[in-house]
Image (cartoon, rainbow, N blue to C red; front, side):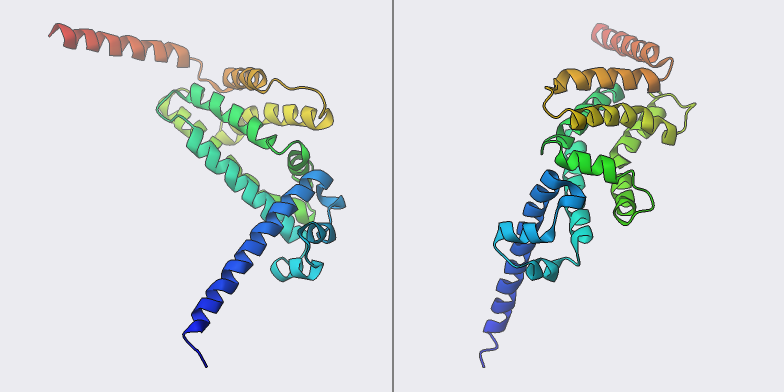
Length: 232
């Protein structure tokens, strides 16, 4: 018996399994985006891949687990993009504008299918799939909560309102826009202009009353110091 070949065979089998999982998740995302949760089936996912439904069940216990994994991976991509795109060296207001634009763009990047699925099933409290969304939503809102907390610490975001109440002031208007797009998928959307309008509206609600004045004072102080150093 050639025992030296056993690790190579196991590695090849593992690589094949990992590729199979990636393929199922890729096609699963397509089917859930096109059909929604109720109309999507593991049979169709298997047929598109040219495999049996039993093969899908080798890696996932059922449609619910597969859907949660598909959406979890999608959320991970969105979170990573949010964290990579936020210009932390700039003001909280400017970061918020980037957050809003990135949020809307990524939620619609695959069309309205996954967005509609998240919006509808995310509201289904008490149901199996809806409850599975809760940890995903908590992870997804973490970058925004961090941004708001940093804004409060710097004095740019109002501190008289708890973070948990500031959050819907940002996410609420965006959810409303996304519902409109889902309801009218053929209606053109100027994403950049919409993101700017939503961002400005959200900022007007969460900005500290003296934030703009404080920013001007800080700028004036920096200019004064710079002039003093140049004169010296």
